[in-house]
Image (cartoon, rainbow, N blue to C red; front, side, top):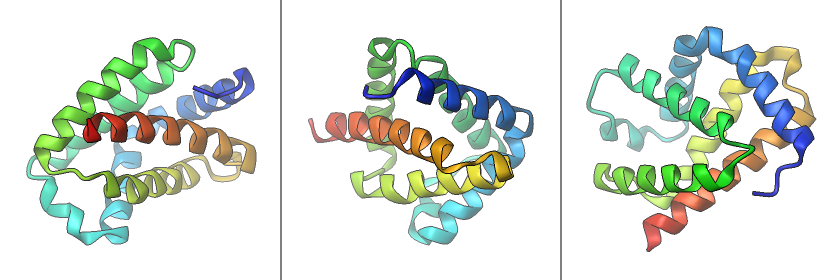
Length: 137
């Protein structure tokens, strides 16, 4: 992963700001995702609050593993395999990443600086690229 130590700090610090509003953040994320790509909504069949908790737990795990990407990669590979079984396609990563960035912007307000955005975008690219490679394997 090509994140700098400063980017890791920015991501970790900003996620700590979002965690207290994690249920609202998850709601913003899914509302945004479905507005960006309504065709994704049928992929989510369960309780959306529970889905939101899973999303935030996965983001927490990713953020917590930024200093040890060798531990994160196998988690992302397993996640990719599960997502294939749900019907997720590699083309879905763009709206997902964009919805996550929008959610962070809404949750962080003025603390969502261009530098923070770039750090999150770099992390999301790593996550998406890792998962896409596993989905294509």
